[in-house]
Image 1 (cartoon, rainbow, N blue to C red):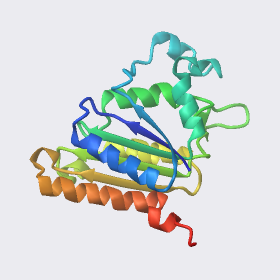
Image 2: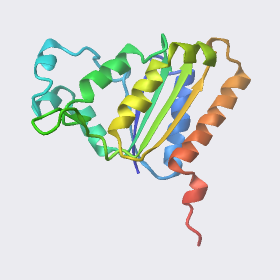
Image 3: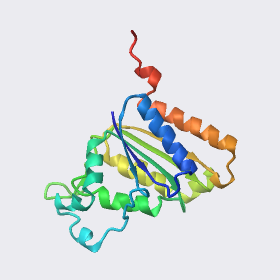
Image 4: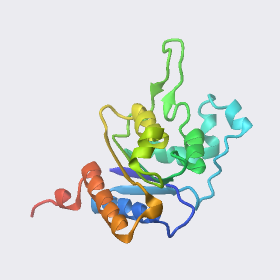
Length: 207
């Protein structure tokens, strides 16, 4: 298993960081190869420049500004996002990462003379996970439509292998969370990861 974790939070002591740690611990437990892209730590620039936009469909040159991230996407078979939900959607730095990295001939193929619409380019990815936090309640998030969750699980999911495993967990009402609610959520993340990638127990080979 080759797992790429795209992690997004500006503060290393955040609860989101604790969620990321559980995700990575579970991946290590099944001997996965792991790469973590920490968007804030690496100072990722989320702005799609005029030059990048102009060359957006020019492949493979379009990958040059973000070649290491593209290499990580092409390498992985398991893709997991860990981030806080802000204004019901993805933080700007994460949305910018999607804009700049999930390019034509990377995440999808552009329409051509034989194809009227785009075609999937992430069919090597068989597991997709989203772990997030929301200040709003579950009900309010559903009313608004949870655009961040839909962008990844539906939008990116349509480009992945068919079928693929997917999982989602969010701690709602994060601003009024308690130590008990946070502990309960981390246990839920652990269970979700076990279902997504297996567990150390299920990977143990009998003597």
